[in-house]
Length: 223
Image (cartoon, rainbow, N blue to C red; front, side, top):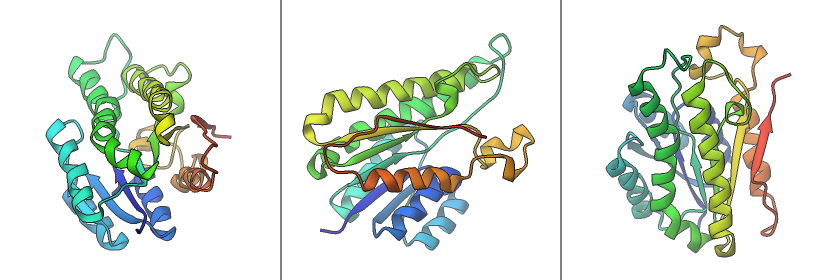
């Protein structure tokens, strides 16, 4: 049976870089994203199944996995890369922006993973959660984003604890500022930031590990 992977947030940034790597490694792909235009363009490039969806919606999360299952029947790699960031100090941050970041960055990853677990257990698959260095250190101005990404790291570790015996392995990738549209607000030049392909290379390495080797967390610092 051919190997298959599902990437949320797969139409741009880190998700697209990982999807390209998986395509090059021979995986059949499903990519999910909110923007239909970018999604269709990426899907055409990757010869991937495209699912226009918002991971803040439980129904959309279920549909993403169902669409993948219908086409590929198996799931070897799940990449939860869909994310959103709204900067703001604690006293200035609106409740709706707090909720949005938890809904997309944490709840969405939980939901997609929960729906995908039967397939992942069957394949003894790998889950890659794209977290952030902001989930590991204090990040002034990124209170909600950092808290949600810290929660994603915890979810990753709990997934390993609960389903390691099923052969499912999970890794949280925690990069500093990456050259993506989400980081445009920093004003940093492209060559000052971590590249999306750096994250993809981490995932490529994870794919090469023996079945008993597990890396729960990778922090990528910016020099």
